[in-house]
Image 1 (cartoon, rainbow, N blue to C red):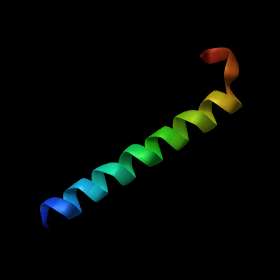
Image 2 (image 1 turned 90 degrees about the horizontal axis):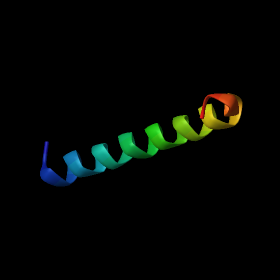
Image 3 (image 1 turned 120 degrees about the horizontal axis):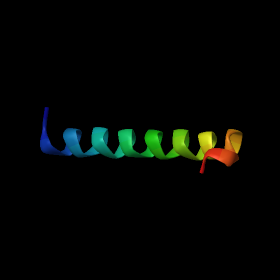
Image 4 (image 1 turned 90 degrees about the vertical axis):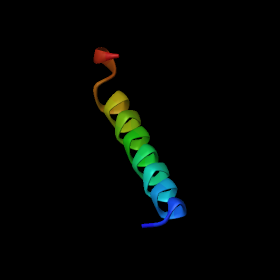
Length: 32
């Protein structure tokens, strides 16, 4: 695994987490 691969995987994970949090905020607005 190269450094570029590690960085791209980390960015993908961050993007996925951000999307999940946005979806949760839309579905459960009273919790935020």
